[in-house]
Image 1: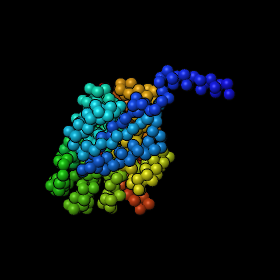
Image 2: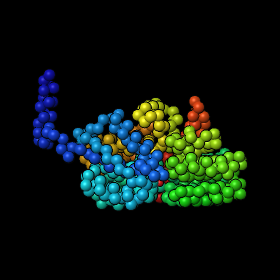
Image 3: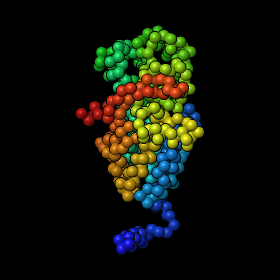
Image 4: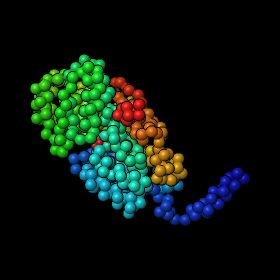
Length: 392
Ligand code: PHB
């Protein structure tokens, strides 16, 4: 009783000194500006990340280190100029302490200078070109990088009798990263590669698929951003490539959990490498998938959702470490942080602010009537290989 009274006394004295105890002031709120493509061709990314961020807050409350967390969601429609304008408004008018989201590489790159100028941490939850973390010292990433996923695919292919590959990637940052990482590792292992690039906007895959049919490689390696895989798969079937004996290999972006089950049997047997599958066998993931589906009318979380969920965790845990301070202190607190994500163990690399994570080799299989990326091999603690090579 004595102890308790003393403790209460100290707390209220501290509260008085700090001027707390009254109505919640603006200072006690930490606003997080979540900028996402909520409409347009990449709307599934926005829908998944928003749902995951809200789930995290539902499960963990909206107060951290004495700060009330307020999430402000803005739709950039996937257009870089809009992302940049929204970030500016959020920073200047709403005085957000963190900006987050970034559904595509150009959106993250356009906004990076604002994070630097304003000293506002920017949590990249989706975009995956290697260089993004180098565009601002205030960027921290919870998604992953294309080289991180594509290099293990090249290694698996060369170890599994595949000698000749055609790569087909969306013609922008992450696609070029995927092409280079895959081709570099695959040719180093003695393989032969031909590279094709398809426009990002309104892609028509058929002329490229005709070239693939003519080249008759052992395998076709594909990267398209989350959400576009269904369109690719449809044209793959229409061109008859599913029957041509050309093996389909890809990064997990193509067989993204949001659209995989709608692809049908054509997707069966596709081998991909990636950091997240909704079928990942761990108690943390089972709890995450169940809660996410329950809160979202049965929608299955994809890797974008996990990037959003972990991004919120990073913000929450960072604020606990800084006692609610933002800016440079918050970025510093995020560096080196480790935890068990639904995807498995992850760490924010203290040198690069990028993510270190397991990459899994998976095969599309039917499980309880639904298509899933079933993991069958793990490459542990993979750093972004592009930045790792630079630091050597
Ligand atoms: C990106 O634009 O960086 C991006 C988008 C979707 C993906 C991967 C990368 O699935």
